[in-house]
Image (cartoon, rainbow, N blue to C red):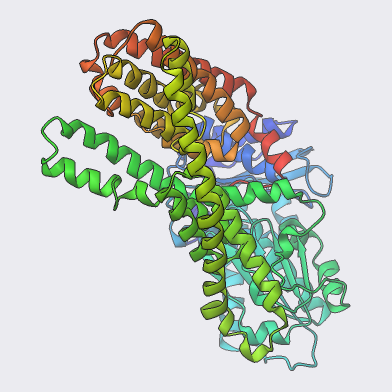
Length: 639
């Protein structure tokens, strides 16, 4: 594909009027909208600004490449813009930007489009070519320059492929590198070309692996890594590091790969990089002093949550749909199928906590930690440990593997093959499972039993106070032992035939419906406080909340426990108390909105839930940090 198929001439802005960074972004987005290349300019701008918050796409030398990959894009497009006066785009070199290339890629961009965008990025490393583009006066001239340069580049690549350079010997200067950026569209390939071009000028042989939108390309071989004097990792996202065990590794932002290639190559050649020790369990990318222990914990949590989220969404929605068929009888095959797929002993909800724990463990201890983490999470699910127990299991398994890596680091290299297939699985599972079995499970069982007993005594007192406590407990751990204690108590009263059984169920059900509904409201009306993934998950929480599936709030509670749990407890407690104040009764143990018609006062039951959800949603919305502040404080970059 020709680059000019994406750089459509009618969309080019040859004389930009913008004087500020945001005005420049708006002017280019307006061109995309005029040419019907985007369907949601607000969302597209939001994603552009999100990328800018990670690091400026003003790469220096007068060039800015704002870019986003989002469903707001109808068709892959590059908008070229030129400012004659220059715009303070907060570029990495602090100088004004004159040439703008706004890249709009749809979520399902084809390989051809991505390859073309990558090729565009590479051309802009050539300063002579950039100078020619600056002098162009018309869209036709710009298009002709890019067509000619692309043809020249492709010809050179074919010649290189037909006559590859001879492999260097072990004694020659040889460096390997990995480049990667969050979106994988532009900076990944610009850093690759900058490193290769500078290495050629310095007489240094180099091999560069790129981790872009198409996945890893030119993957480094074991022999190349072994022969290299050192490794440059110019990346703004996590890359596979274990293969660099024992090598000198220099890690730096991808922008340094573009702007400081000579400096990076020289540092590696002169041994000015620390040795990476995979067996020690410390991921060099996370060992910098600028990354705090809390940021590391947050990152590990996010890894578990992102892998757990599909189980929550898929399982939760199908479980909610199953309630619609339950009235046909529990022998109804559709109900049985949906219940089996979504819940029960075989469905998605059965694996939710295990997946959370497993991928927290992977983030800490890499692949060897997956199995003990999953088993520990499953043990938490099978007992009363709940999602809090799953969190503990994930961190426990990860750090157990870290410890084992250090313990076995002194083994002869001939035994290295035994570590991943024998030593780590056996000892990792034994230690993690043993600690879960002997310590965590008994502790949470004791907590659960104590809570049920306390509630039984409280039941003889004030009904409103009991409703407040039962409702609030539903939000404490979103399906964990505290939540289950309140639900078990209500079920016990309900099945005993006591006259207040339906009252207790109303308090518990209302309290359990509030957290996901509150999150849904907060993500809807306080959009700036949540990233795109959270907003998507927030929409599904409308369905989960209405279906009395409190677990929909778990990913949010795990990511921000103080704000989400405290806010949810207040709203859930309010809803539970209101059901008792209004003497609302629900003669069903589950079902949420699908059993409201069975209530003695359905409208008051709905009112109690809405009031509680609005209260919690408002607290979350006002209390939660803005997205940009969250990202800056965590030291993390979100896709």
